[in-house]
Length: 348
Image (cartoon, rainbow, N blue to C red; front, side, top):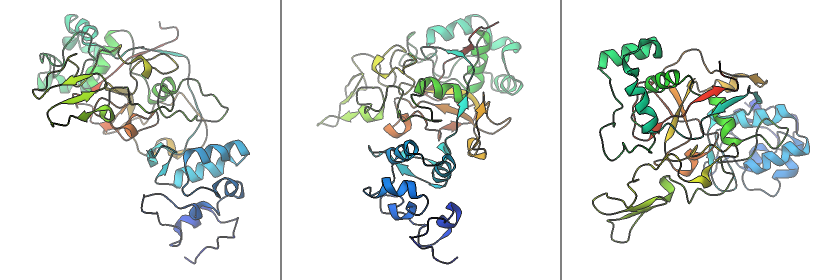
């Protein structure tokens, strides 16, 4: 394809990124401003002083009246863009669309070991009515009767979030409790709180806002001591033997870190443990339509289930509200993975 003039204001996004001249990134993995400058005259006004396109510039373009279709195309085409604090965004997070969600009640806390014990004591592992067909087959074939780490004293404190549970187990617990797992859309809405603008997104990076998660339970709050034998995390001190003053080397009580609560008051939606949601994962599920969606349930089938929220082992990028590149087979049972439940506003 022939080169594209930088003076053109009618070049399509597809043409622009097909051109060898513009289909390149800089050393930081970001598209140069010249790459996008021909897409929209409106954007040019805001990128003229920038060295890379970032989320704040996109937001300014929205407020200035750039067409929604132009922004959708930009965000859908970019493989990576960055916000002012250097956080990278993946392609599975775009395009951004408006999603309408009916009223629901999300649990304030992740399901704790004490909560989950009710399911065990209620013979939940032996009652077929709580399980999906695939879950029941998996459970019986593998003789699953308890969470993977249930008898490990490092992780089974009553106030810790239950971990080592598959999506199947999380689903069964939710049904036992008269609830369900949240959809991906419900989870993200609760993490963000009510959008503060009329646009189909808001700019909150994390449930608590845009502040760096330096006081929360995640990988970025972990440092190795000068002697290499101790670790200081936001939630405790750890000696060479792995012991800690608060027994929370990997996770914390479900009601810990109130500074990390979202504006909807749910605690630990980023950090502590990642959380299963109901949806199957599909890379382009939200990218197939630029129109509004109402109560999306995700793909009808799939191989992987979505998890959201990041955990004690996640880096800052993985703690963002919109981060989607964390998905697992439904039988996965990980140390950094739990869940919380949701009910309708007026459950029957």
